[in-house]
Image (tube, rainbow, N blue to C red):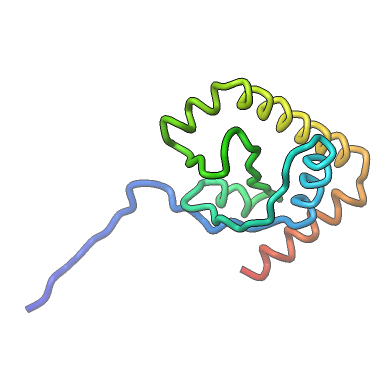
Length: 126
């Protein structure tokens, strides 16, 4: 007895996340300068399409604190925290960090080249 089976994906696949340590360090530098508590805990990323982006360009996936450490994303408590004054401050602080990173990478071509080379090497190892 035999059986035929056909399978067709119904959505795009989700690739693993390619880390960019040098870019992470740049984020950490400005986050610390702006008073953000930096944690090196590796929580994993779960299923995220950011992994797909990280296969094309150097990518970071940081979190900016908007509530207690026990706060879980995609919950009513998370929604309330995001709409709170602490959430507003975190949004502004996160935007400042990203803006400072962008300005640095525009001005420091050597750092940009280092980050790009690091990304290329990591992708070649996959």
